[in-house]
Image (cartoon, rainbow, N blue to C red):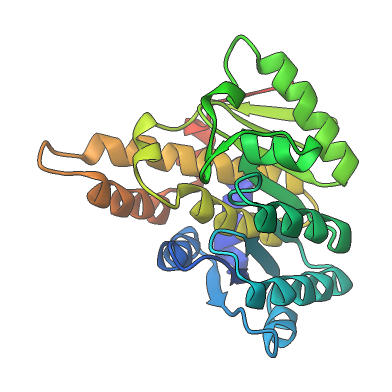
Amino acid sequence: MFAEILENVRKTCPLIHNITNYVTVNDCANIVLACGASPIMADDENEVEEITSICSGLNINLGTLNSRTIASMKIAGKKANALGHPVVLDPVGAGASRLRTETAYQLLEEVQFSVIRGNISEIKTLASGNGTTKGVDADAADKATEENLGQVTAFAKAFAKKNKAVAAITGAIDLVTDGERAFCIYNGHPMMSSITGTGCQLSAMTAAFVAANPDHPLEAAAAAVCAMGLAGEIAHKRLTPMDGNATYRNYMIDAIYHLSPEELEKGAKYEVR
């Protein structure tokens, strides 16, 4: 299943419009290229509608939110909806400030998202307004564990169903659900938290996977999450004692570039609930 999803990305090379943050914009562009898709970055409201029109998918990321780009996000999101293109929302830091939280709520009201990808604290904020973010990171009290996985899965399903979108909640255990089925994913490595932007990269790559597999958004999002986690595992094995988090970031992008459909199928670690 996941092999075919990655094959479709490489075969169709979808053009993905990213309105993302300037901390990770280069890494997002490179991860999209590495997976076999093509990125374009545009956030001026005078061109986003036109750019979205020539693309196959849209990724909206709140990482370095400002008043100028909020209007652009809404314009691009509505245009993508009108064209039937998948849209991914990454509500970075929702709960950390009123601007981020209110913007995320507005986007959910005005744009129909195919996938909402965030950490558990961000998604809890969108669901009920009481997630506890630590800057742009999840609070330890919110995280999914083996002990609370059933409870977190039920929460994720309810959130996905309410928003008519696939919810992808990433952490030590990743959850991807459409409200009916949930993929509990165990790929990844703890060192992934030592570099900024793995979540941003994943959201950009998720947009590419869903754009190339529009009839299977749940499986496409799950495949993207597995691929990112698997890349984290592969990259860590390459590290030498002299390497650090900057090398690790590059090795992760390299791992996505070299990842074969068969390797993804074999290396994906998940259960469906």
